[in-house]
Amino acid sequence: DAGVIQSPRHEVTEMGQEVTLRCKPISGHDYLFWYRQTMMRGLELLIYFNNNVPIDDSGMPEDRFSAKMPNASFSTLKIQPSEPRDSAVYFCASRNRDSEAFFGQGTRLTVV
Amino acid sequence: DQQVKQNSPSLSVQEGRISILNCDYTNSMFDYFLWYKKYPAEGPTFLISISSIKDKNEDGRFTVFLNKSAKHLSLHIVPSQPGDSAVYFCAAMTTNFGNEKLTFGTGTRLTIIP
Image (cartoon, rainbow over all chains, first blue to last red; front, side, top):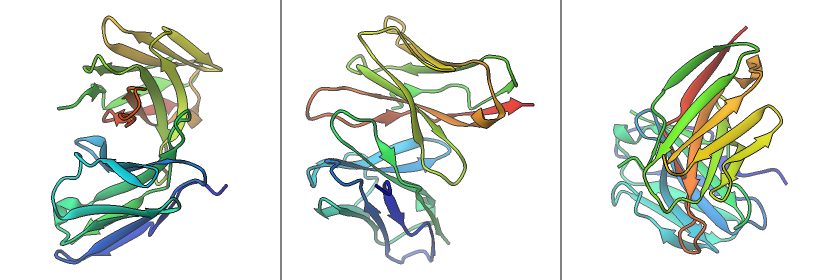
């Protein structure tokens, strides 16, 4: 397996624009997590899914953030409209119930 | 409210010596703990874990110690090598079904000095 695949690796966008981050989890994993890495808060959980169903979205900072998992092999994290304070590295991770979480390489988002 | 805390943002250790990274947690429901290692421009990778029924787990040069009464865990690396230079994240979770999220600390940047 190629591991967790995220795209794009880097995204630079203007304030107010819509941003969509994509994730393909490891095949067979039934949990998918979206994290954001910042200096102040480290790795902050935004939302996680179990069997494509959102379980806990309490970490989503505002209504501008939304996430979907239409099937077992794809998830998106959308920010609309984006703001400069959203600039961070966003990670997707997946795992089975009895395994550790495997992370993608991340998407570095810069909002100018 | 930071439930997992890594109070040392950085640590420098001489090559060959022991590196000790510390982590504290506040949630008594946590019963499984993990350490992840992160290199620049890469995602975190799993290093070692420990269940709350143990107080020590060893894997080669890496040992994790858990002190439940103090809500404290530590990662020991011995001997430290230059390739160990990275950011280390402590993480915790409960294994109760329905609450399987991993909560991470803010990380400690370890630098091994040749």
